[in-house]
Length: 448
Picture 1 (cartoon, rainbow, N blue to C red):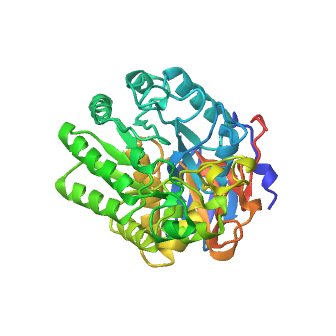
Picture 2: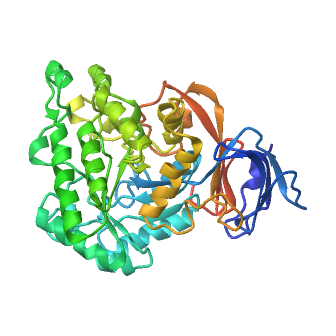
Picture 3: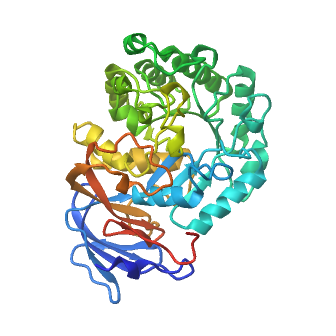
């Protein structure tokens, strides 16, 4: 199929599609008609005059994925990523919406910056971009940022985070939790006690002792989570825990939920699959914050995701230029790119192991992230009348992940050379194809 014919001007109405034979969230096969940006019909043996007919027999239809934790670097760090290149990476991975973290330059701590990000996302057009606002001015942890102004802005920010830094001051954290209650916001905490992790280079344990690298102890994450769930309970507000990574953290979240605390939590694909043993070769692709943990922690977070203790999978997509990784371990930047590989990793770590069904994948990678972020029009069921933001995934192939699979500006993926299952064949954002027949489309009128 000639995919270039799908590269329509963003101002043009979405094309009408008839997808034949899709397995809806891994269950029964059906035809899906997409027209005027919505799902117009679902059934067997459908026809639609003038529609582009696409054979998706055997492919899994999922609601478009939603990432609650993406670093797009713009404004300020465009050498690593831009909103356009990051949006392309997201579409290639089956995403139709991403939440952009605020650690940019300038920091996204004012209405002006979040509105600028929103406009750049709209111009790119590949996904819906929802800015996340900083909790504190400049992410310095000293005084609250303009939370209300960002919430009332055109960006309608509902998620606030100092990700990259912990909101370490308990009084500041309490005030932030109290403030966002007024507009049903949520504080997304980077749980890392800064005093317990000074100079940390990897997970603290036997491997760090053997390698002589300063350790990042599990208690540095767990102590902040324990404090914050109690604060959230005290003020009756919503708390979200970013990139949970330890068995102890799972236990705390499980306890808090049983207690009735309004807390949600995310796990990254890399914490579902990779362990600290990969640090032995000092390959900086595996340097990340929080660090890769023990095998026991990997099993614990998988179980936590499977039983609902952990609510969602979020990528923590963190691009860096090559020179930030091609250096000594201690000098290398923390972070991994993950938008293009996330669904394939979850397939391997959770579906192939029998821990999640494809319906569960739709929940943890689409519906729940959209709900937590209060993002309308995404994460909706694949039913008639709902927005046509969806992905068609081929679960059958397994092949090595390569640099050619990366569509963003940076290549710091920990999966290059690793065999992963599956492939995203189609992504539709609001009824417009952004990926067709496995190829990322170029839309006229969008910055190159």
